[in-house]
Image 1: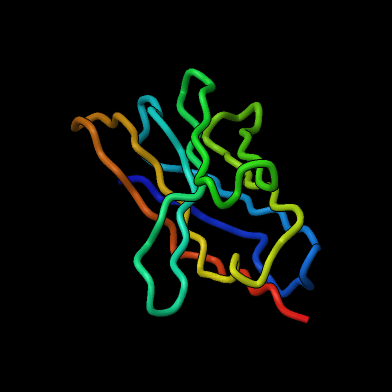
Image 2 (image 1 turned 45 degrees about the vertical axis):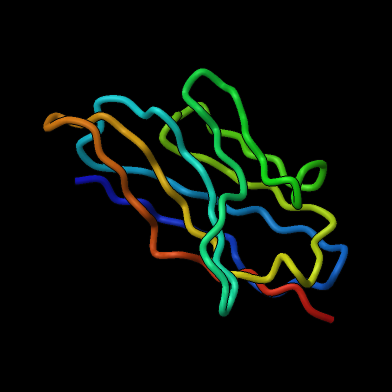
Length: 119
């Protein structure tokens, strides 16, 4: 079983920045991808940014040029640097991983961290 622990959410004014962190632990043989998703009240969960093991990245159009996903040297940790935040970025942000474990391929979600952009 794989656990994801997120941190870094909070309240920020429009135009401000936040950095989210997500650390994966548990029975991991290798990670295919780690990413961030978000869910605003009354809306479906949506992809924000994904980082594949080979280094390729995918971003939602709404965050391109403002958000950057990266990983630490300990490759089971991923970050989301969020700049020029807008009120519409307000949501619960979830970390996700697609991995190979001893029992095969699996996926895990973090518990979520609240990001609120408001003046």
